[in-house]
Length: 317
Image (tube, rainbow, N blue to C red; front, side):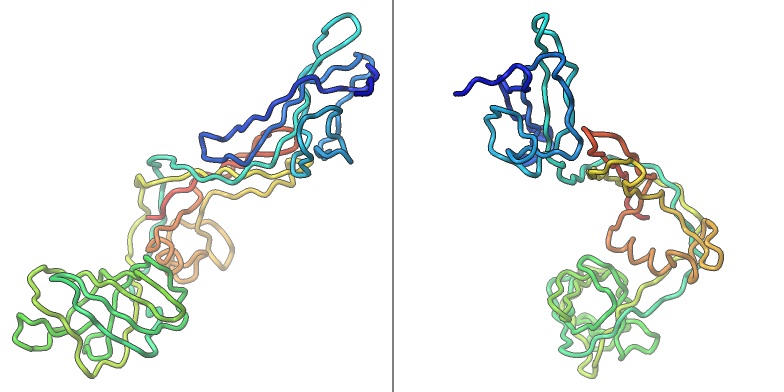
């Protein structure tokens, strides 16, 4: 091995750190290089330098090139003798985004002045109803549009009912048609336009369940519930994401959730059909167990010019 001048920073030992093993991230690495150089020849690198031979990988580094590992700083050089100093030169990958549980969080959820039922989408073919158990049935139909998502909850209507509800025959009623309001149905599967709904009935005493032969469609409806603003505890999560940027001002962040009036974008505590989000949009988010920002983002320097963005979210109620 050729001799290296003391004026060239040289690696004398090295190791790899996995800083987020406890999060299940075994990809993000911090490369540590213990370097030695004459004190008068010491100088840091630039933030955007990468750990490749063509760029600024330390001399005698034992690691293969990693173009996704960026220079993130040196420790303070320490004297090893009157002439030489030693320091740790570090390169790091941009960490993976990670979501973790954040426990119960108290939040003021918006009120709503909407208490009407809104049709979401009507089936367009292949309708069927199957009785699965004493208190559950399955509806299958083709539904085009409606922004339907698995686990979304709906009320279900059919065209036979006289009051816009759901009508079915129950065996214990001796064949009489009974209008049956289904207000606990959820999408259990979706393949293309074919949607499977699981329907939870209000009794476990039914012996059978079928729909009238004249049924030609089902309609999924979403019902808004009027209420005052609600202070309540709800499940929360925290998302850690990482951005490489020379200036903190260029790091994208999220604001705390708030409802605004569409007319003037002023905050309001009550949802209606004209707010952003609207009462219907918020109801859809709540039905699928969606989350809203409980706080504005917090940004802190992780290493070098890699920033950690912490976002706490709370499940919408």
